[in-house]
Image (tube, rainbow, N blue to C red; front, side, top):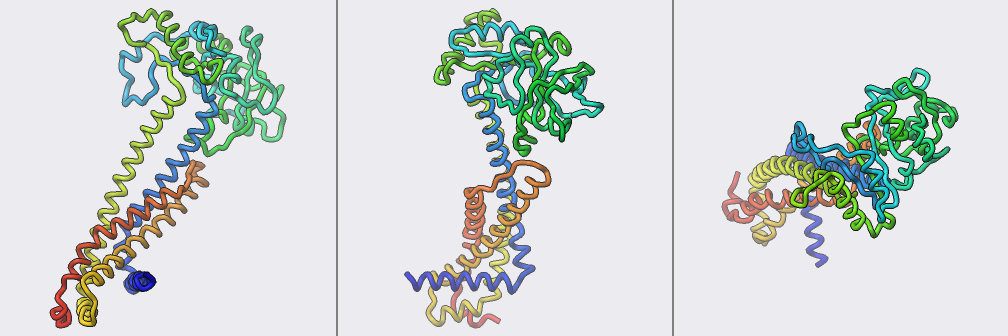
Length: 417
């Protein structure tokens, strides 16, 4: 066993020596492998980083939250189909009706305000990417919302359509870097709003730029309806069951209620969507799965090109070392020894390319995370995947040159000039 291990390392050493003796040729040969493995490591790092951030954001919504929307969650290529667009909108009254169900602890409408029409400002300074949402006073209970300072608006302020707001952590940082925000007034579309609460700033490398609570402004939905969107075209509802384990039964109650309210016949499908975090997570996994497939395809093409290059170079190497092969056979080396030698040399070449690709991918991931403020997370399985694919490429494309060397007649090899 020790003897075989010694032989193995000797062959690996010969392989590295061959790489170093022909640096440019070796680099060009490994280039395809290097690009393929770099692509794998970088893309997996980005996808894994986004996955972690996405799951954190999803959990922040409340693990048992029930979402109600006009349409099913999904991605529509181009314009949304007419049969979906023409569905009846959800209403505040629908949310109030859901709130009264026996298995529902609380419900709130969720109404977006377009900041392009109603910009958020403080003393002339504008936050361009703020998201303004009209919600109910029960939102903190539904989403387990964390308030760092102050409070959320109450039922009285909601009923009176009060101009009060709660700011996300990044907005607070931009408007009030060295000042106390509570009690100050910001303007939304030129209308003054009193700041009654602020949320903590979350990791800014989250899903597509960070935790959404960083750049959100919550106002009462009654205020949003009175001041900004009198006839909402798109309203969603969030609700939470009285107990997490009763989520499924609570969803059944919501569906039954909305079918009655929207006059859906027993023979017809729902003209609304009720879903949970799992539905959103499944959709997201499908998207990242498609991206991962494309990544593997691109990497596979690079590895294929690299593998062909390795095979060509190994064929040249076998031809250059014909007399060496004949000499080794003359002193007792058999076909298996020759096959093993050149196969290991091919794997050493691709493995080295894979190792360099992992290093470059790791560096690129750090650059992406720091410079572009985008999530990236290197995982052990992606490193093993990159090295595994590089090794398999060497084995597959190195077998033909190795067999050619192993089958070479020793007498003809010794006579080769």
